[in-house]
Length: 315
Length: 205
Image (cartoon, rainbow over all chains, first blue to last red; front, side, top):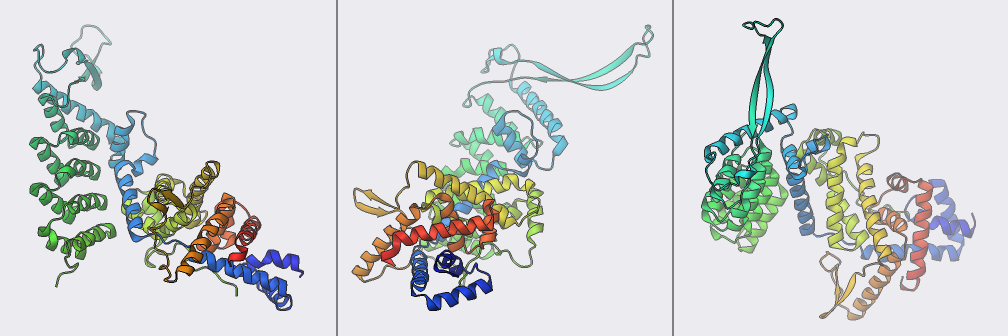
């Protein structure tokens, strides 16, 4: 072993990457060669200097990263995204598929039934021919047919004649301003469409910009507490953030924080709740700290309690 | 004298939890399992990104991009390497892209000038408590700047190998596997990195 080869091996020796026999030979060389021993010492000093510059990310940074990640996952990413999806309106379909992982082949029929439901609602709120709030020129009929039955025509005089029964659904495109009360009624109805989480999500998303209306706020509170789909609940929570100081909203947020089984939704709820200091929440936050599984949620509650100079635990 | 840096990555899963079952659950779409999997590795990933990029903002972006990429592509994980290696391939690729982009637009200094005087962008990180001795403080500051300079003189790949070996405590064989290269190439990279740094930091040690 000469000085040149030892010089190359010193970093590996220092990091314990040499086989035992090579390590022995190198140590024997270092015992007899002052130059190489100095190099080994220089390597050790370098390492010590670098150790002092190691940065440990703060717990707060880690918590923020986790929070941002899970929000991104719960909002836009879903396991279904990984499988093939039809090439239609991307944000809508991403949301829809993200939150409907188990529907599989039923998605299309359910989508159709949602359109049908919307059609009925539209028919109720519009009067054909009347000069209503809608732009009637934009109502574009589109008939969707499905074959119900096919059979020989028994009563026909013509031999070989067949009878086909078609179910027809009339599709209408309705356009109008979101502040139009009829449009709002349509969207409020769509936000309750139990068969289609995508339509509910889109509706809640649109209504969020009108959360100053008490009717819309009531709907958002209902969706936060009742919607079976976490994506819709999360979206409704977004719309309520501005009103997180309102006692009625806080009551629902507290309920979500203790009862929602989805950690992403609980994270959003705790963010909204703790954004407003509220001494009345001390006992509630303490109980959340005690029972909550999610570290981020617990940490936010602890931080809020500390900010209020309250104790973390109950005695 | 030989040492192995502490804190080798991963292995933060509760022993009763089988990582493979957790991964399969994520592949089936279980978001709670994903969160659990993230928790097992996220501290090391963030530490790697922070130390490598010396920027909280970039480290946050890398964290999010890496784990979202894991989430989106976990279906393609076939258990033909450890999950740790697979995850670190993703993380190191993203970090290398950041480092390469920076090389093009010049390294962002950790200390930036502001109207209120020089500001260390890394002040938010938990470092050793400042020494009371002002002379010692000055020496530490100069050493810190010299180290930044030395690290900045490495190629992105040398920087990555050094980071993974020195701070993350990974074996060179594993580093080679992560970076898609041989153990020998990782050794050479580590050698070049330490030589360059010893040259820059010689009189400070």
